[in-house]
Length: 290
Image 1 (spheres, rainbow, N blue to C red):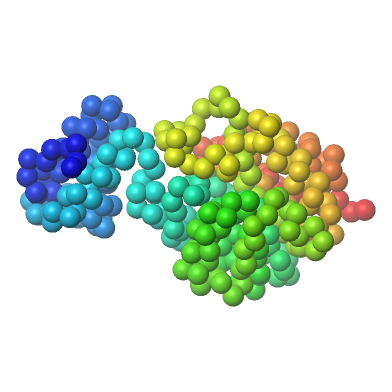
Image 2 (image 1 turned 180 degrees about the horizontal axis):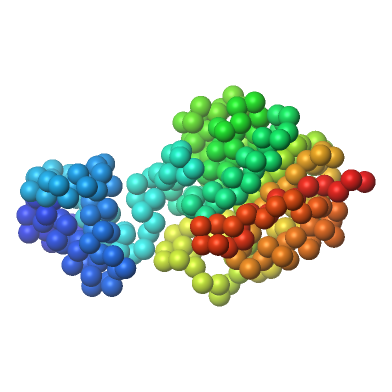
């Protein structure tokens, strides 16, 4: 039985209850959040819910909303409640097996698209693919390219697999369980992208991130934020073609260090992209001429 008490079964009754709970939690915008939460739960637009507040809500939807409200108040990401999230104009299935794709990562896609547009179609490899949002978006925008998503987590690959099928990319995109670039070290690929785990202990995260999102995809091995980049730069030197490129998502304030490491490993800096908050988030690198 739900811990929440609704005084009626109209949309307004559910909104009032959610508003009280969110105000008690000192939510940033409790009115907007309560309306959005109910709208997403009912599969409607927020304005449609607001426009007809007197509409009755079915008992099973009330039960569902009570569960959503409980989880949302515990800071579980809304994307996990819905089971989906929009990214670069496409819809991706997500749950607690993968990170929630974020709008700040779209600048990484933009950098990748610009580089791919200037090259002949080839093989794209995404390391730590998670939901597949980077890999699949780049492939959707480049129909002649093929792709491979690598992830250490078999559970994450299940989510990526569902997305590649839902987006019609099963023929052009394959998935493989593995560590870093090990599955392709004996191959030659054209483009490597990665949003590796770069968070360190004590670093400030958003509400619910540490509690609900997969730690394997968040926290840097050995608590060293540069370790993933060192590994990938070394391996990419082996498997990237001479004219290939490497594209990283990086943590705030770490792009200069990543560029320095890349230069030591024989890579040239091509471009750095900033995210919506002005943080240097995407670093594009090319192999130096030997």
